[in-house]
Image (tube, rainbow, N blue to C red):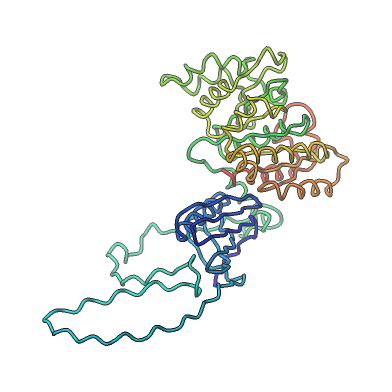
Length: 453
């Protein structure tokens, strides 16, 4: 019996047919499977579900239905499968077949001097009778360990949890009484670990909403601050806006006034082998306290004076991906703009920013629904999106925050909330100026984003 606690989200169902076809449904989105045999269909389905488990970084549940009946399974990120014994299975009924008549005895062959052939090894038994999805491997022959395997390494170390640093437990620790951390401190440490990771290859996070004032720029700035403060340098925010992008207004200005319009003519040089990372200081604005860089648009110019084409988005992204490990893109409001759509093509993780206002929340939901119908890649981004609900209005209530977040549960992978904070209203945004509870909420939001990278 499995002892692993596996959440029921996401909801995954699979169906197979004897002709090798089938489908996987993940949170209401169906993925057809077309193979030539039933076994190939099962393998394709398990590969799709294991991919989802890998993105979630935990085992997921799937209910399979096919010629062999209905079987609840648990699929792990590494592709291993086990029966989900917390739910009942419904094997297909076995048809009774009349036994065949005994064949006529044949005359015994003449004896020969030979060694009889060894018996074939028995087939691997199924974990549950009739369950063709899960089988136990045959027991391997015993092997004697090598001398190195038999010896315990001197380098083996036990993982010891750091003592508490917060609350009364932390106070006792400072007085010399070692106390284990509380569950809330453990949860905070887990979120810090999530945003401190360095992933192989650059990752691009787009912050979107079709309505102005929905909180895209504060979300971009504060998410970048969370990842840069805990994970170190190599974080860029980029104002991908045809109109008056305000990312430059909410962040520190460096010792120059350069924008992405100044960077574009230098793309070839910056992509050359002789270019150095310090060359980018001519074009980006470093945030001295929050440790990330800003690539500004030019909000004082009219849209027709700073028109950016999809090819320009490709060029800027190529430079950003060469020099930065994380790229946060603050987007404009026109979802039909080729510049906006090209940003989506480069995105690894989608973040929908919204407030508790109904028009902001509805605009974000409509955007996710539109992306789900654009193409397969956009649909996957929408399904795995993170929604950050910001209490921009001090008069809104926690119940309104929870209502908006709950409304997104069926549309996105996660929805998190951020309380109102006066330090987020106007002026330059600095993470250290936020209230402790607001900082904790943005850390949780960053961890939700990290789980999709």
